[in-house]
Amino acid sequence: MPPMLEERNVLIVDDSAQLRKILSKIVRDAGCTSIRQAGDGIQALAELKESKFKNAPVDLILLDWNMPNMSGLEFLKKIRENPDHKETSVIMITAEAQRENIIDAVKAGVNSYIVKPFSEETVLGKLKSLIASENKQKNKQ
Ligand SMILES: [Mg+2]
Image (cartoon, helix red, strand yellow):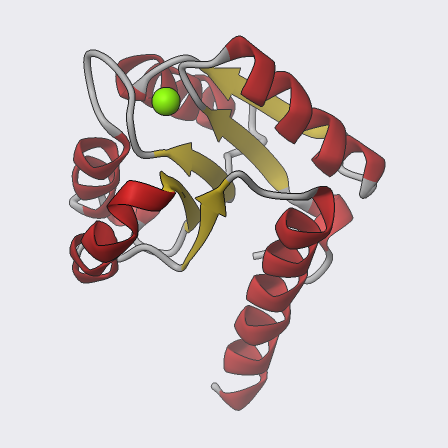
């Protein structure tokens, strides 16, 4: 997993086009150049496949919980079954009302989470602390 946020291949999954736009601006402003988007879990699975095919496999996912067709939690469970995505970093984005459900996401292997509404600072802070803890973990091994 690349040690710097700028080097990560990011996938933003949210059914709101506006939120996708906001999130991609935040990660782009943070220096990321490889950013994919999907409107639900099914599209997100296709993006993961495509990214692998293009030799730039997604390694960081910002994942909305509430989406049609396949929810964020369903998507998370699905990718964690795949050895390719056991280690992929996933940050779940959840509505305030679902804050207590985050335990299910933790059980399913989420790495971090953000509660809506969020600020740019919150998203950047979560991204940076996640990557810092992954790097720490890696150095211990
Ligand atoms: Mg949503």
